[in-house]
Image (tube, rainbow, N blue to C red; front, side, top):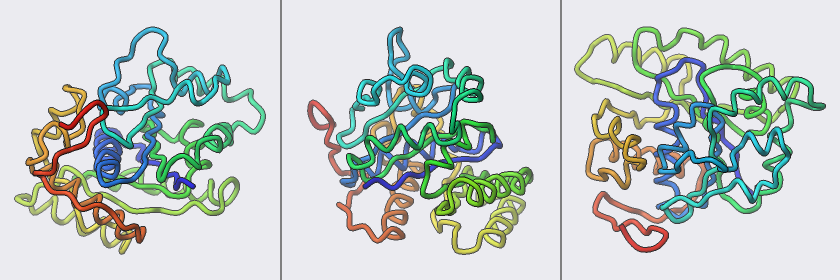
Length: 273
């Protein structure tokens, strides 16, 4: 049965989608069966794995609003073991339609029950807000990964995020836990950034992954090509960081995995990379 993990931070531009997509891609390459759920109306995770937002595309909005069968919305990506439920700007309307639905906080949980047995991990890329869609994600999840940019304002709003997690745990999902905290966009040349990094560690202690994600131009370029970094530039510093994060993630979850390197041939649907 899948472990469901939400990637959330109400502060935008912290590398949330980048982390969700690239960690998921590496886990798939390492033998885990992964489903990404794009729960952000911007649909960046969808385009980040090369899915074209064309007319007629079944998305998470169709599952929430039109009760479309979930199998119709799951799309296989180029990477074997990696599937996605896409999103488009239409999802913005779901916040409104959810308000009038019974058990509105548990709509997503009920949707995902149908496919939990088909995956090892379901990764939910949340929008940068703490609205009803994010509450649905937290209610459906076993745990949360919080990407945090190593900058002066990194801890702004953190109290609100942790309070939301606490309230969901108290009233909707008592098993919800913080899976881990990922430090993103880290530049070791800056003393201030290193100080902020230490503040994050002081706050979250052992929940902070030892692996951090550096600033890397190849990571920034990859989404515009519709490719996770493992396909776009597996030899880049960003790729090395996400490979290390995937290893640390699996080790923390006590899961054996297939070791890979930057030179490993990636098995794609339809042929090798």
